[in-house]
Image (cartoon, rainbow, N blue to C red; front, top):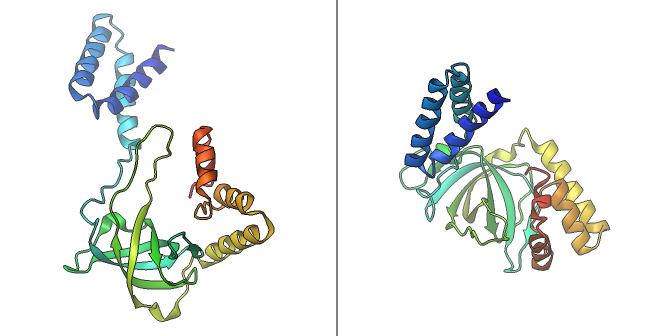
Length: 230
């Protein structure tokens, strides 16, 4: 049990260091000194291992502040069908294979292999490869109690640069299956029921009404909408 507690203490101290660096450092050295004083030398490697384990498992949030509000060129494929929003525009998920700043041509590695949600006036076929110019939106995340954190990246379509000769993405089979499943659910379920089924199976949450979202948020069950992991 002592080994597990030492390991867990190392993990906790690593994560707490990001918020309380001085306090966490003092606690770490006090804990280390107490182990040495009590001659519990075998627990010291477990404490250090806990810190190292947390370090290698740590995945910091990607910072997109340098591209927000900018026009960039992205290449990839739409991975979902278009959903009509209340504003009259369509929204579709786009998987980015490569990206570059339109003005400087500098590659934007931080957005590669990411998914962005694109607003446009046109529906695009899922699975086809495109090169498009988009403008990344502002960070509109809200951290109010009872609300789910939205880490999605949104952008407005500026223009389509290249259809890439109509080539099909290697993931088009899965994207097409996902799109067909969403269509089937939409056509065979009521509006709210279909939106809920799509959210927890394929991750398509664009059809959910504000009332349905609020119901899950107020009940503390918003995490159910992310079961699909998309």
